[in-house]
Length: 302
Image 1 (tube, rainbow, N blue to C red):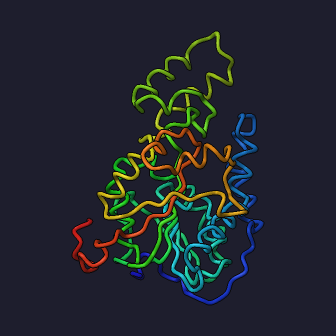
Image 2 (tube, one colour; image 1 turned 180 degrees about the vertical axis):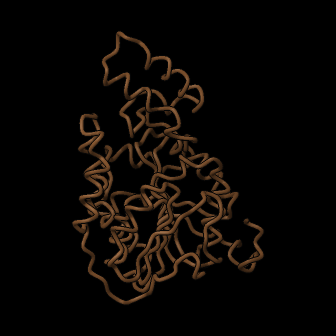
């Protein structure tokens, strides 16, 4: 790993993280104080402070790929919860990248005292790491915010070790509710059209103040709507294979469960792409026949 990208982040065999150092928690609460009256304040506070769901995801990944001494990257690490979870699960190195300056500051603050963990600024295009730098990569609710999903996956593939895995989780466009805001309809509309339509609705005085507020926040919430079909196509173009995860294989599944029939349908050949499950969760690997096609540094994925 280039010193400029991860200076001071060492590797060690074991770590026991303090999930919320006092300085970090105080900073988070102060950051969220202006939104105390919003409908989603309590949920945001829980999301920013909790590590439980990241520990569950680390458990899912560890059943697929060993985390012992692994080099872990969180693409879009948010407030750093995944860095703690994977470091505690056995990863020798847990690095996060962030495009948001506030999130980067909080993630760095959270893991400042944890050996083998750190957060690095990211320009949203080129990851500041050499080829094949990581054994496990996590992309949690990120790809739907990127300008170009294929370019994003190509860059993840570039820094993925030959036998590594990428855990990718993203809202499914067939689920009709925009999950951040609880608005029915936007995922079924083209992004630009949905933004414009709900911006108009946000100005209707007949609607409640809460409803108008939610509608006003939609613009820019996503840049992409991701479906099974589009995700498979982008993955294939990036030289990656996609395997959707089956909640039945993981007793401590981190996501809300659907009816078993619907979950089974979502993994069925051909018709699975039509199942309106809430979230797509899968593992990406370098496709057979692609692993040896290009040597690190010569792939052209820049």
